[in-house]
Each structure stands twice: as C-alpha cells, then as structure tokens.
Image (cartoon, rainbow, N blue to C red; front, side, top):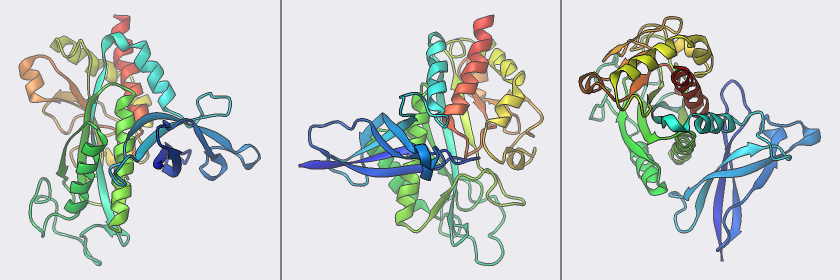
Length: 334
C-alpha cells in the first residue's frame, strides 16, 4: 500500500514568488524525504543546470485528500545541499537561533482578496459595489461573498494541525483575513505559507482565484496587508521593552519597507487605515500608525506590538527575520 505526499515549495518568481506543488507516491511506513524538481521551470535555475533539491520542513496531514496522505512544505536547496538563493527560510532560521534567548514570537493576520472573472468576487460586471462600510465582519448575502471557501479553509487548517486563530471578512467586498500564531520563527513562516497554499487549493475547486496583491483595486478601497504581531520575553514582561522595540524599528525603516512586499507604496498611502510608507510612527490603538500598541498592552504595561506595514504578499520568513534582527539586535546591544 502507498500514500500521496503533496510536496509544496516557494519558487523564484519576482517580485512576488509563487507556490508550486507536485505529488509523490510513497510506500506505507516510509516518511517523505528529500526530492527534486526542475528549477528552470520555476525561475530557480538555468536549463543547463536545472536540478534543485526539496528539503521537507513541515509535514502535516492532508485535509483535502484525507486518509494517510500528507502535505510536505519544503525549503529549496542546491544540489550541494546549500540554501538556494530563493530560500529565505535559511536566513530566518539563522536569526531565530542567534536571538533564541530573547524568545521572539509572532502572530500574522493574513489578508487576501477573492477574484473571479477578472474582478473581486461579488463585484458587478460593470461598476462597483456599495462603498466600504458594511462588509467588515459583516453578515448577509448582499454584503458577504466567499464564506463557503473560508469555512472549508478554516476546517482544513485545523485538520492539518496549523495554529489558525480566527477569520473575518475584511473592509472591501470580497476580501477576507485569517490569523496564524502565536509561533516562533521560522515556524510562523512555515505555517503562513502552508495556509496560503491550502487557501489557493480550496478556492481552485470553487473556480475562484486568491489574490495577495497589496492594492487589488485602485481608488477608495482598502489594500491588503499581513499585519504582524511581535513580542519577546522582554516585551512580555515590561512596557519599557515595548517602547524600545518601536524605537528600534523606527531606526531601520528603509530596509523593512523595501522588504515588506511588492507594491507597498500603493498600499501605504496614509489613507485606508495605513501610515505612509515614508513616514514612521507608533502609538496606542492607532491603526493609522506604522506600529500599533494594542490598548490592552498599554493597560497591562506588557505584551506585544503590531507592525501594520507588511503587505499581504510579503514573505513571512523575511518579515519575521527583519523584525528579529532589528528589535532583538538592538536589545542585545543595550
């Protein structure tokens, strides 16, 4: 007897990588091991030297096929078993190990937009839906579309053992969010990528496309982000560390903005619950700030901060690495 293992990896497409997958049939009792693929077809190798290696990093039950079948998220290596240039997980792991004593933890709020027939799901063929307002956390057929996909995705994440914390309809019609956390790096990145893949795969069965574009529709419509909640052992213990983390992030703005996802200037305009990409700010309960300090954190004088700048299409390995390097690096120098 055998089972199916779906190998999943992140390709080398720029500016926003795509997720790839292929199926391996494995004999019962045998764990999924390293495998390979043609990197010349995924923007990861020339045709003259096309072999790339898949190294499993997260193996979980396959909630779509069921049974004994598995999903296998992989990082990409060269044939010398070194991290491939497109492999952002390796650097994230290195940063996590370097600052492990500070116990960095993350939760990511992943926004996305359903598309069908070239327009957001539920939008009329010509013109626009009613203005934003009733869609966020809404109920009712005139407001909400795609809930059946969201419900299937949520159940799939639970069945796969992912640390999904919740879901909600977002501000623009056809836009939703799920949250994953609280997890250490690089596991937070592993689970966000796996949850993204599950969402796209389930939407495929409904004839719907999932977009992680930062600003899927021009005009007076919200963009899509991946708000990133972050804490360390120190911030979970005292408020001074919260302020120190915000101050550290304010001293490294350009590197973060340039690595927080394609199209960030289109999304971070200072409108639609964003701070401008070229202005840094932080404050309690402020959704128009770069960094929001939740009200209950202010009240408790300890907890976490929310970096509201990362795009929906940001690489969670890169985002978590940068925050760890910036905040934990500054703390280590004090």
